View (cartoon, rainbow, N blue to C red):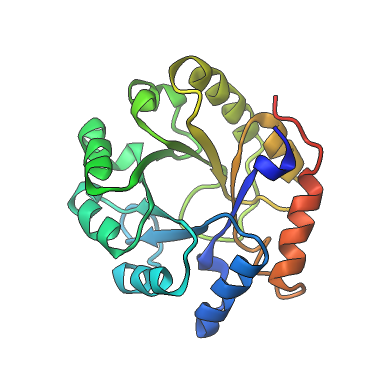
Length: 227
């Protein structure tokens, strides 16, 4: 896989919300492949972020695909509303779904691509049965709830094992990683098998423009081949 086939999605959680529209436009102009929206409820994770009105505003501000990560309890209750608000990909947690298969089918029926994710300590076996029906698996490389954390090194081995599992069950499924990815480790992340990268503070950095940050990430993965 070449660097051009690696998708990078800036996480708006790290953007300056005082000028969110500008920050979205800067990401789009810098070649972002999608935008990542983290929804936190203060129950499933120890933080509260954004909800439907902000997602609707993001949808109105861009033509890029919007990837929504639900870090909430009872996500099945909100599937249709988040898809209507603008989610192109909707990702739910294994740990938050009592009936994961049903929730993933509901996402597809609502018109979005179903995604599934798991926390760092949750084993891959917990999603093995639904791998054939998802379009994207998100490997959390930090404990969810806050931005700016360091990547957990064992996440790379988890990505490698997941890539092997998907080879037999769903080879076209994307592997996404979220948490602590930056220019110093993105090459290792891609080499492990991830093809869809969430980048928050690595894109929306106080010391660089969005264009400079995106170029730095692209340059770091140039020539990398996943294992």
